[in-house]
Image 1 (cartoon, rainbow, N blue to C red):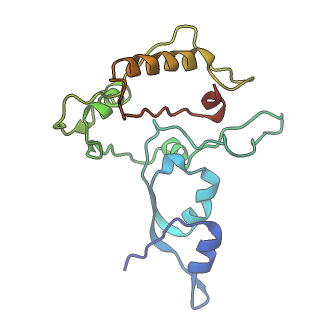
Image 2 (image 1 turned 180 degrees about the vertical axis):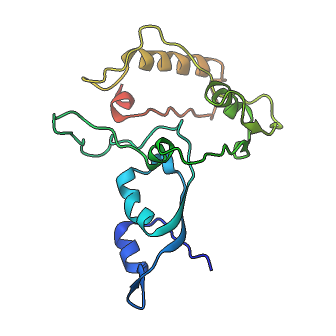
Image 3 (image 1 turned 135 degrees about the vertical axis):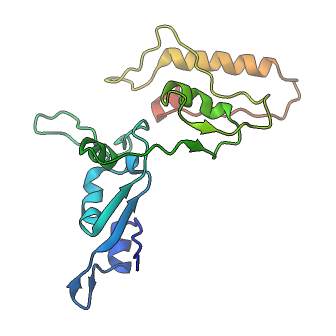
Length: 193
């Protein structure tokens, strides 16, 4: 029978799962890693060692795990080292790959259209949305916009452009509007601008 392996926090895993049965080491039939592009390789080693087979599900076009909220990991020369995801390692070892072509999660097809065109060369099959008036993702080029990687860790020009766009959006709404607008930034420094 197929046994299941669930990715849990290390302490929880130790409490709930024993990899022995009657004192003998036991292997799982298959270990499945969902969102493998987000899992650092070092965290996958023990579960991999406990499985007869492994299945890695993920998207190499997504960002790899970030150390933004953690202490930086430095190599022997003092240079920050990116964390590699287990999916990258699986790809490098030439494991067979299969594209999951159907995208069914978005209510609005145009939200996926940009990524499908830009990164997947139109290979993703999407389902038409009912509401064609909904705006999707729009790319707006900000001239001279530059992320200050080594300093303030923000992009002043982009923040200024976002404020202009907010003003334009609210200018189109009635003064007594109850509509609100949310702005998502990728780090705290950008938010503070």
